[in-house]
Image 1 (cartoon, one colour):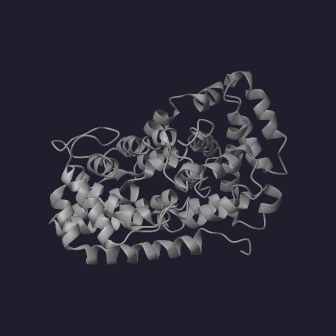
Image 2 (image 1 turned 60 degrees about the horizontal axis):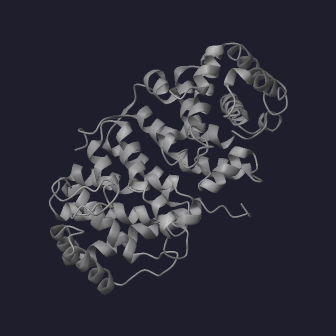
Length: 421
């Protein structure tokens, strides 16, 4: 069934990595630049291709366990009291996919100093974790306001000074041979680094199908949702209801599967929104609402940059568009809104009304349908899609609640690391 979706794994991970660092200019491209450094070190260390792939993927996603923007900035500035925490969460997130088993182990130890590492990580992963750690330390030390060749010698001596304590002498030696090259530093600081990695980076050849894309979309769904307990199950609800409405409308299994992927990723752009806005216990003011309006724009640009899934990008990103053209951010009207985008708008609205929010509890069936009827009458949402929801409300709501309960359990068991653990 799934033959007709084929996308490049590296494109997908580069785009997702970039999305995770959208949130602040201070973080912009941090994981991308870390991955470039790690890749260069891996080549000089003559690592086998599979190990280079693992190091590269681990670097691109190494801060995946720092869920909120606030957490990410603390870790980035070196102000985090508990750096272990995002390493443990990162490992848990990544190891849910067999494909990321290697990167998961590397991420687990990327903040463990060399002197504490030798007896903890399995030997092959000790070196790989150290490569990512060096790359991360280096990237965070760069002053972005200063030309790179006015600071590269100081940066290199900072790294050398950590040899034998935080970093192994072996990894520092590898770095010293790389750091002699100006092109290494100029690439690292280049605004075109993203396209350089897209064209020439490792793991170029891995293509994935819809089944694997679905699994990876669930992993990123968790990253998007688990930043806040109020959104912890939102995308699961949207993906489930969108998939179910699609089936009831007679879309094919493949299309319904793609709808679920789009549902998992529809709020990807919220990675760029601070938690203080997501968790606000009341309606947003005009400035906050303006910030929130960029989230669907980012969902679209990130998913579109992956290549090969234009439909999923549209279905995911157009969920705040309205038939009368008054939605955001593209103001697309009914002439151009596909059935997938119409389904997603209804699924997102239904899920949002029925679930608890920071400033109100979830609404019952009568209230949800009454609000949605009004939106149908005002030409905001599609009448046919709404009718499918209305006529099958019990079934869709039941299924959605079941999936949201599973997501809630996953959140509580795997992501809210209590101090006791």
